[in-house]
Image (tube, rainbow, N blue to C red; front, side):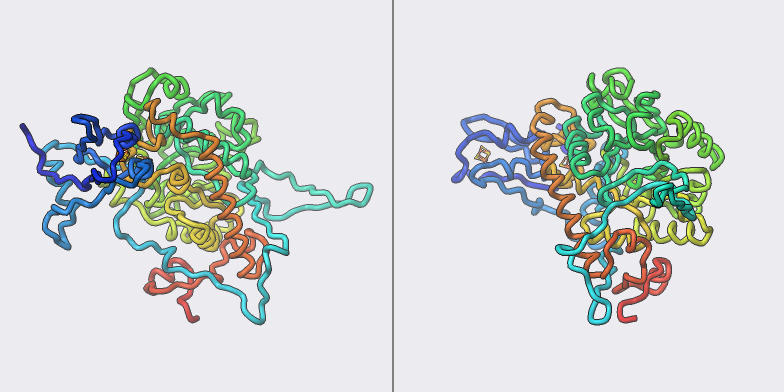
Length: 503
Ligand code: SF4
Ligand code: SF4
């Protein structure tokens, strides 16, 4: 029998002295690691991906998942992953796939940036006693406001505002399609978005009928595959997004395997059951900024100029010039997806070696739009690596209007970032369409957890603003003077437009 030379990464162990043979590990594992036989639980450790569902549900803590001690000989140059991938590719001739964002040891610049705080001469503000404004409006802003008094002497806004998305705080959920994640996972996002006054995003295509009640908190997406796109869909949400690229896989399309296309997904995406859903790498009608402008205005026409249009791109080397073109093409929102952004499935080689970090991209785009005098033409959304309210505050200080979170939101549903979403076996019921797995994700329970996270982050943002002595998130936007770099070289500081700590 052929035995793969690619070593398994993890070893699942059961302490038989503790095990009460309740079989919960067998029921909970989506990967089939555990089976029953000979009056005990048997383990096929080769299948273990360390998603830790079994560990969490074992009532007696009898399970331990450890790194395989029989590692390849430690070698600084040839990592475990390098050796494993070479052996796998030699055996299969295939492209190793992965899920979630890049996990390589690239610098995370958020960790080298520190925020300012008030002392002595510039008083801080107590967010528990003073009002704090986190409300964020996404869309084009006029360069000046005309105000007049009505007959009763009240001030009235004369300027006609273009459509905006109003967010109660500067957060939104990253696009994740029904198909890549389960309907229950989308419901968690929709319920939390509604409760928190923010928006979720359909991802590339189709809005399931169960989500229509949440449409005031939904952004609908038009991707290259045009899945589920019709006039009702375009007009359902509060905004429409054109997806050009994704941070985890810049420059390539999407592929949802037929196994993840059961009846409901097929109906929502308007494709046959069980067929692979392929999104081409380019939008086949967009080969220039002029083409993009045509699609932006086609969507504005289709929505009677009532919805802001967002354009989502992966952050690549010339992101600033591209963003400038997007703003000039008429987009109201530019969604920047950094290279650490998550995915349901991507070739590992693309995810790990292409694109640039979101910190660089936000600073470059904000600079460029300001230099060209068009910063008010479009809002900037930063995504791809926002792990905390601290990261969000730093992204906003670098120039973002709002931040989108994807992986973080999935973690509130149980995700442990095992990276095996592309298999469709997610034990937590998130990136799977297997009914026995999706049923375990209760939208009410997990919706509450996601709401808690957003509430907690809102409070943390207010604490940060108070410490900075400002009372609105708008005052922090692009305020790089309130950031300092530690351990960053002068070229990076210069690029970020941030001074070194101590200056
Ligand atoms: S869940 Fe824990 S106690 Fe139950 S069978 Fe599995 S290892 Fe044993
Ligand atoms: S969503 Fe599921 S499969 Fe994907 S990384 Fe999280 S736990 Fe793993």
